[in-house]
Structures are given as C-alpha cells and as structure tokens.
Image (cartoon, rainbow, N blue to C red; front, side, top):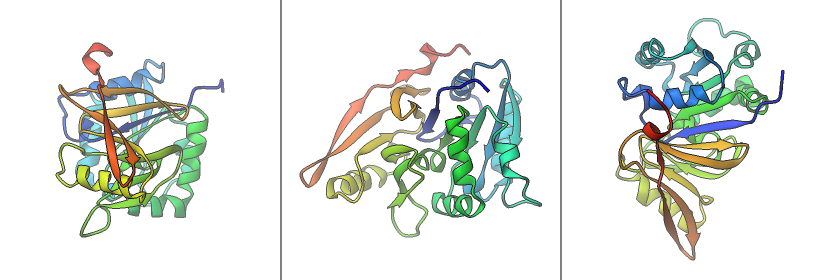
Length: 240
C-alpha cells in the first residue's frame, strides 16, 4: 500500500444523521480519499447500534459514491475487527454515549485498530462522540446530571467540544473547564461545522451551513478566551 496522509474530520454535529437533504460534508470526506467510489464503514457503537441511525446512514449512502458497511458490536456475532476496519477508505463514527463507546472499544482493542487505520491513511471521521473521541479530552454528556471532561483516545492534542450552538450548557461548561485547567485548550464547533486535520495539525475548518462557527478556546489566568475561526463554506469547496 502506498503511504497516504493521516486525516481526521471531527464534526460538531448534524451531517447525515440530522440533515438527510444536505450531504455536502459526506461528499467532502469522500473526496479526501481520492477514489471515485470509497469504502465507508459506519460505526454506531455510541448509540448502542441504533437501528434508526443505521437506517439513516444506509439512506444517505444511496446518494453518495460510497460502498457502505456497518460495524456492529451489539448485534449478533462480532466479526474479526481488523479484517473490517483495515480494508476501508473511511471510518465514520456516529454520536451517542462517548464513555460507553470508548470502554467497549478498549475492551475489544478497537481503539488500537483505529490508530492503525489512521496511520495507514484511512480517513477517520465522526460526529459528536465521533468528534471528541480523537482528542486527548472532550466535553461529554455521557455521565448523568451535567457535562463533564472525558479522557479520549489522544490521537489529536488538546480538547474538543461539539454542539456549541445547539446545547445551552456547552459553551459555559467548556470555557469553565478550560479556564480552571480541568481541560486542555482546544476547539469548539457549532453543529454543521467540522475540523479537518492532516497529520496532527488543523488544516481546515469547514461548514455546510450559513454562519457556522468554530472557536479556539485557551486559558487566560482563571478564565478562558475564545478566538473565532471563520470556516470555509463547503458550497465554495465541493460541487454538489
């Protein structure tokens, strides 16, 4: 296999799971593979392999240049994970309970396979839980009662907070965690906005909705400072 660049697309929210009529993000991710028809595996572990979530993935795939598949850890006999993961062009991780997802991944060794896939140049992408999981830390609602910092896989340095515009407690919680030092500095994204990393560096911030925002959030004394990042609108980058 020829060496391919490592890439991660961390999505703040939405995508095919919420906007079945707007697949600009999915086309953008597909284009990163350089293939006319990419092999894409959807991993819905965080949702407990929700059938409705899987159905939305299958429905979206009918309109995309994908060869879709689904990796389930809850339904029936679990396949040989390496034989599934390492033959893909894209791994797309769905949203849900990040803590449960990471516990299960680590037990099955899927966390190590994800790193190997990334190092081989398989594009890693995901929304919400599938966004924060790639960072050192993420803001999660996986623990009942409040938002909390969560230790994640650490492929990417720093922290991540999705749903910055759609869930009222995300912004005050994230800025409080970063300002107090409970969380590392990082990036927050609105729904409809994604961070595209090449290697371990942020290369692009993209949006497929008007007025989508991203922020760099850093500690300044005992508080946090937000720096707005204007995303590139996907209609300017991707045809269709």
